[in-house]
Length: 277
Image: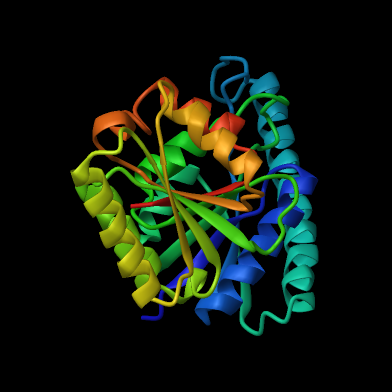
């Protein structure tokens, strides 16, 4: 089975466009198929509790059915426009799927088919200044790289890899070096910490590994008290188009994706984020 890119396109219009643009970029770079995914989640929590056969219950059932039909029509329209956008970006093998159910359950069921996930930073129900309600859940459950995009997506010219020498980030360096996704794109390796011999050795290994994979590298060892602020500031100061981080780490990055640090990084990131698992 050929693994492919799955992309969520059920959120806000600007994010649908950026998700499509990011999907096209990744699909062409990796030379793999892509499938746009729209999940219709039914919510009957507001339906009144009535007896079976009750007239009000029958009316509610009819309204629920009509609402579901409209949601499918809307999803089909979104998918038609999204597939066209992919084709405009020269994606030859663009597919789409509309599913009913729980997004997290459906993503778990796609694990064997998935190579990468693309999702917008916010969805229909999230407010400005807030993350999509399912974003952190998606990152926790998907066992493949997840690309989180802003309202617009530009093909990255410079990326930043957060590195701390942990098993997770060492694996991330190898993934970046071995994948054609980021081949040839300038990369800043950023480590937050003191200039110890161990840190210099770790940075030299990361630099050599990426350069062996045809990724041009600059290294940065930064002393800072706040890891997330330092990473975000480096991204802003150096025109970083995409941040690359491991889902789990140690030392100062240990709690990334565990509690408030996750929300802070995802919420305040000035650019797209590629989360590696």
